Length: 640
Ligand code: PLP
Image (tube, rainbow, N blue to C red; front, top):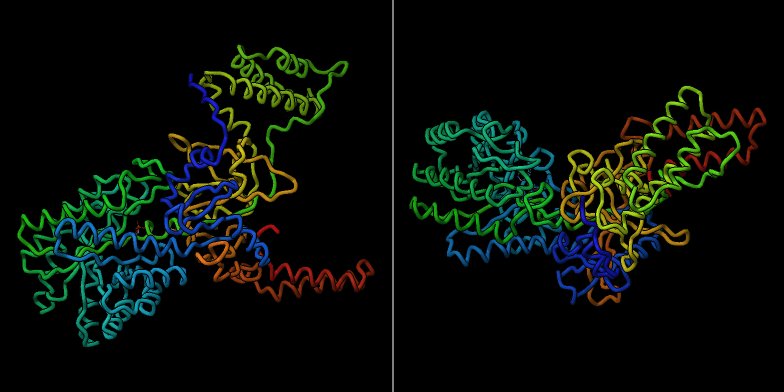
């Protein structure tokens, strides 16, 4: 039995608490007294404030359809500054002799506007970029023009990849090729000699430490990437023989993304730091200690080791790296290296969100069917009706069990042709009435029987949201990633509808299966009852890392319209929309699947012409229908 919660008076403060906004929002999000979700670009509620409903109104005025991605560029800039300042402060506080020279791994969000913003905000800190594939390398070669910052090159590399890297060296870029597979070294040496350029080389070690959670397999002995200690020693020997030992400047490891427990970071630094020191003692002139990614994001705001959370702050992360490394270097009497981190998730996750409108609601527990008693009705219908009358606060569990039994018997009777459609409809209606009454009783009760704990899930209303989970939140579908979900308006009203959110794909998996709960994830979320006259908007937050760029076109739902918002303290609204990137049109998604939109339109035109010849469609209507088909081809893939 579980104690039911005492009811508090609803206020915007209560809304903040209910949706954990301050806990996951990192100081960037809050609720204003109009009950609208708002953004504090400076992480201060006393500074400029962007009311998200005002952004939505402006989006509507510009005739941009929902769903839309909204990017808050100031948040992105602020996160870049935050990580750089945090490391700089900790380095100073610890009297560490190396510098922080972070890089942004563009795989986390390769959108040009995102990378450009990060490069611009990071320029003052010589913040660099990381690429993990040839196409990413083509992009970072052109985007990272700061010759002081690093460009770290990871991933599998063929000759062309390595040639591009050496092209970067010719342009005097600090482009470090990280050897992840032993075979890459030989090719790199050959190409650098051929191109007469001195390479900068890194080695990625396979640490025995494994992260925990969803990305644990990126580390450990069986990781897909990285070199064993014996391979690293062999590389040192080969480079010595080739007279290239001076090129080996970076030591790297990556134990997986979203490290939830600070102890894992400590263990990795302890092991990695020791390898670094021993290599230095062998005469390897290492300058950079690259801790890879892994800095977590507290998606659920629980500050725990849960998979969607982390039990440490960015400052504690930096402190653990700097202090532990310093201690090892001092004991081993080697130079303090420059510290590189490849933090992507922590920089980008919070800057963007998906805003969708609720299109419709689906009530599973439909109770509008008339259930009045009819002479000679089947006993099962009468039995179910009796249960509705017998129900009281003291017998909820027994009545619930009886109702379930009658419903199961009714289903069997229907299959055998003993009862008809009308009787089945009555039994179902009475069944849902019973459970709705039970839910009401339980709200007033101090205790909830274990068997009825999931009553809210059973009765949850489905809110049909105009988006595709496969396009906009693929990790929520694929690996159960928890993302904060909050209504954008009406936060000054108590949300009373217990809901589950489903998308508009024709896929039963197209729904959000878990939401942030008070202590652990829950399977329903409280939203407001829909009003006929008012649009209801929901934000799916923290989609800026991976989600923005990994989505797929399931059901041919394409990329979303994108709105880029900048803060402007002098504007009455404190913001302006700098850029709108239109989402994918139906013709573009179709073309990506090898359809020719022109051929499709011409087929439809021929069919319409045939019907015109037969006199079934008038020529005027035929023209209208052709135009309509073509305008749909050019249109947005989501519901209007
Ligand atoms: N560096 C490497 C080598 C990676 O594989 C990844 C992603 O898994 C990252 C950096 C980015 O990690 P995160 O997003 O956790 O910062």
